[in-house]
Length: 382
Ligand code: PMP
Ligand code: GLN
Image (cartoon, rainbow, N blue to C red; front, side, top):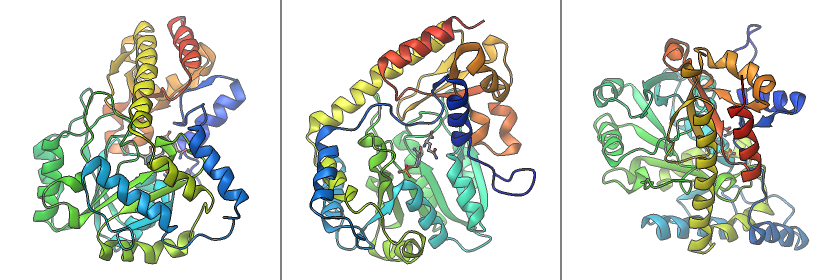
């Protein structure tokens, strides 16, 4: 997290996207789609700007979007969420995560994440003065060992921070793993904060929101975002749902982080959440085709891949190519293959770096012609 001079280091995504710009290599590093979101969502944003939705939105978010989030939780998961008291609109999932962690822990409290973990988690836990504990997701199936999970949670654990479907591994947690998390949270009176931004991006596996499990709803903060579902990562419209008590605690922090954001984008995301079923199934189907294209290319190039069940990402092992150090490979890849990837070691604590050293994360949320080109270049790599 800290650079050698003690300042916060640049994120790996910023570094890799800059490397792509400098070298002209195909950017399979940072996870953002290279096509625009659905026309009906984009049009709704234009209409909202024209209609004058250009001043501050309310701190909790506009009523229409809070209602749309509530309807979405009911429609897809059967959850009852009160749009007035149990929904908070945030500046992307990133702000929801930061506000939740800052609101829920005191300095010295423990926060448990799985490892590898999305980079913002480690940063925000340390900004909040928390103690970061992790449980490994071992290559290649990325399922936590249940004894290790049991040992990692104690009465010192204040928050279990889950990410499902999981970035960077592409794993979708089974009901057994999720049930164990809930059981441990109940036993040790911890809050579950669950980042489900990839909820609609699954391939075959069924996404189970933690909040749907018995005993979870009252102690779970569920986070998602319009960025992935509507291919609008630059809009930064996110949300969380939780009990009124938890929402109020998180709102108290959120009001001093951004107060509110994206007034004309909020109604557009509400339109998106009310899209028909064909939109949601089409999104996953298209992405699945992109996933297969990239995976075939990586396998032809000699990588061993862990077949991802969700997200934008595939993790590939470079060891069969003679590369034990993926960081070194990622620095060479623009020149060798004209492609950018991210070393999985960017998502782990130093103690576990050696377990993930040979692994690279590639994003497949790119147009098929771009992926075909990347696959051909990887296969021709010497
Ligand atoms: N959580 C995870 C697991 C992510 O991969 C990302 C980034 N795509 C985010 C949160 C951030 O989401 P947002 O852009 O909505 O802040
Ligand atoms: N979530 C995106 C990824 O994992 C990156 C977001 C960012 O740049 N912070 O690639």
